[in-house]
Each structure stands twice: as C-alpha cells, then as structure tokens.
Length: 188
Image 1 (cartoon, rainbow, N blue to C red):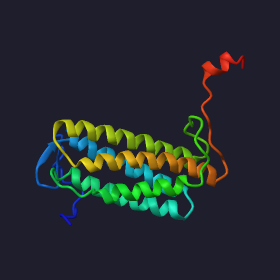
Image 2 (image 1 turned 120 degrees about the horizontal axis):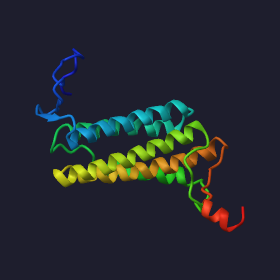
Image 3 (image 1 turned 180 degrees about the horizontal axis):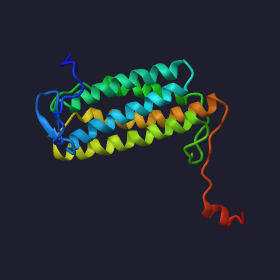
Image 4 (image 1 turned 30 degrees about the vertical axis):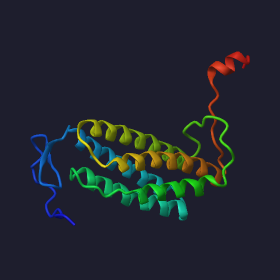
C-alpha cells in the first residue's frame, strides 16, 4: 500500500496540480485526472445505491465492484500499472447472467425511474458510461489497460440489468418509454 494521508490539507494542489501515486504531478484538468475523478464519482453513486438496497446478493456484488473501482483508480494514478484482468470482467458477466436469469424478455425501452433505488441504479449506469467515454479519450492520448474499458462496459450492462432486477424485486415494475410521436400517431 502506498503512503497514507496523515495530513489532509497539504496545499500542494493550490496551483491546479495533483500528485499521482507514481510520484509525478499532473494538471487537475488532465484527461487521466478526469478519469480518476469520474471513477470516484461512479463509486459514490454505487455507494448511494448500496444505501437503498436491502442486504443480499446484489449488495455483496456492488460492494465487490466498489473495490474493483478502487483498483481502476490505482491503475489510473500509476500510468502503466495493470490490475484489472479478465477475471474481473468474467465476474461481472456472471453477475449479469445471474440477475438476468429470472427477468422477462426485454421488449420495450425502459425509462430511468420507478423507485429511488431503481433511479439511483440507472443514474450510476449513466455515470459508468461517462467513465467509459473518458477512458476512451485517455486511451487515445496515452495507452492504458485495455481490459479496464471492457470491465466498464460490462459494469454498465450489469447496472442496467440490476435496475431491471430491482424493479421486479421490489414490485414497482419497469417504466416503459412511450414515444410522443407514437402517441400522436395513435390519436392519444
């Protein structure tokens, strides 16, 4: 484990820079630093989701994902470091399959909403997609672990399916998109 903070106020970032775990410094608007912040934000959203779910397998899965996101942060703050492996991706795929197994076939587009928990899960999914886009930007500037992008793509899939699962689990049901265009054409 790297150095632990013993002093929170260091003033080292007052000029718009931040220290990386490898000892280098980057501007706070650097694409790698943006990715770090977005991963942190995603982890916070997952924390909100955790606070809204009942104890169970979904909570355990999300708690493990929070640890994975810290591994992604460790990769990002140490250019060249690779912690995320195919095993991480496989674990998400297994989670998607388990959550999706009892759900009805998806025949409509789903609106984010329903209960607080379902809405929070869908918000976390959209933040995950933003993290993924940021990582693509980073990879265009400087190479990073290609498996991490696959992990984030699977994570957004998992969050989508988790939202569906939660809507069925809590009995609130899914909210389906009803296009205004379609409603107008049907005379509604």
